[in-house]
Length: 133
Image 1 (cartoon, rainbow, N blue to C red):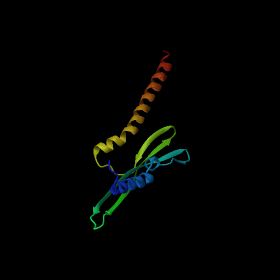
Image 2 (image 1 turned 180 degrees about the vertical axis):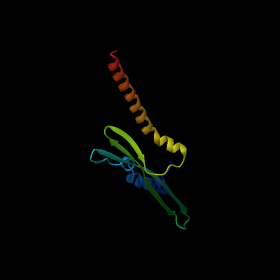
Image 3 (image 1 turned 90 degrees about the vertical axis):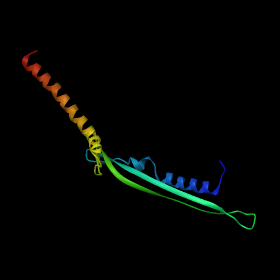
């Protein structure tokens, strides 16, 4: 690919955006308060644009005009909560659809089913001890 001033503008813009965003921007540093660990989760959106043109001149030198720019938005969306050996996600934003709400409830549902299954095993063991089997 031919190296042009527009390519340089695009590469510089993208490189600056890459420097601003890394993994710790999306999954933040853990915060420990008491026996609870909170890990922030964010959504990162960014865009950029650039353009330019070669301008004709009377001399043999070509004149170039161009510009580039970009923007970024970082929105906190949830916290990963680790407490008493259990991990769950607490969403910050409002649910946009029923599907979002259902997906958000899956970890809590799995925890409740697991507790029920453990409770049934305990009850079965207790009843077999009482009957002497």
